[in-house]
Image (tube, rainbow, N blue to C red; front, side, top):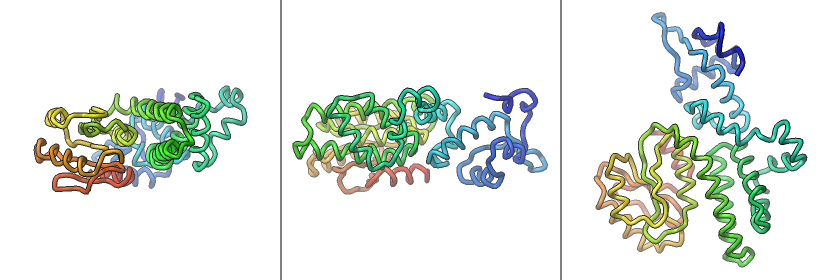
Length: 311
């Protein structure tokens, strides 16, 4: 951290001074405040904005992440620790790491379309280092929502299709799924630690063991500041209802395509009956049944993200 956040800079900054220190136009700062509530100034009696000097380093981090493709809505309300966690996934290739990995670091950061192929190849070799490096590079470059939508989801579908077609053995499918699950838990952790928003219980229906979609939705919830109470696979309805009744804002249920539709409808109806009416049920996943009263069905993560932004 440089002198911009200490010494003479410890006094509050005007919006013009903040703009000059960060390189972000003052009009952009005003737009962010209006749309996202950040950066939040202190108002003088005259109405002029004054910003704590700590915003300089925070906004410099934001600017670096915006260049990498992150959206303002995803990052403007993150803490410095959370911003650093995102940057650590996208910038370790600089300097010493770039010399060590050579041209492969450039290879990792090229087009999204080639990532599933690279991950499948890594899975067939049980090459966890390459698998995780590819994921970290894509997360850092694309940002959470685009990563989940354009990388994690397609990779899950591709691994499943390759296994069903016999091009992958079960050992390779298990390895790839485990690596991706570990990564989604890893990137969610710093957001979980600092989340201060509403609590949401996240679970799969009884008998459903396929956590990929639930892990993706939980990562998105955590990035948006929600406190995820992750109950995971094969959760009995009575246990899910009991957990959710203890101060949850919502229940998020992912339904994999391996759950028969009639059973999914039956279990969701049981859950709706067991929960207080004030608690909505958010349903997603390829096996999600049609919504009924008191439930909301999300066809993809983008629709869930839009719903979270509207709250």
